[in-house]
Length: 165
Image (tube, rainbow, N blue to C red):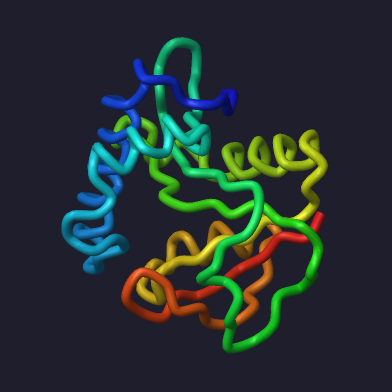
């Protein structure tokens, strides 16, 4: 599997990963993203801004995320404390296709994101998730992200995690 910047041809498959993840979240009894977000237009905007990334195996898109190098204003206030005040990348909207679920790709994807960030001179990664998303919390814990507190983002409190390479 590789991680690369998404291009216009990837938008449909990337958005399908979002929809598949949304359905998975519903099956687990929670809503990670509020209704109407993210949309296909959100993915298009990510791609146009150069912050949309896909995880691919060969020609198949198996996952998607938004990766921002720089500041996330919602992370300025945290009920807790970040591990570092160094420059960081932010991961939003990480999602995998239904066909990719259960193959252990989340760990591989986060390893690719870490390596990509390090290659670009960024040694910290921040991410937030819903309190109900225990699967993502487990993945973040397993992959060396530390729980740092609560941030208020996208209409409510989110659990904030940071990896400090």
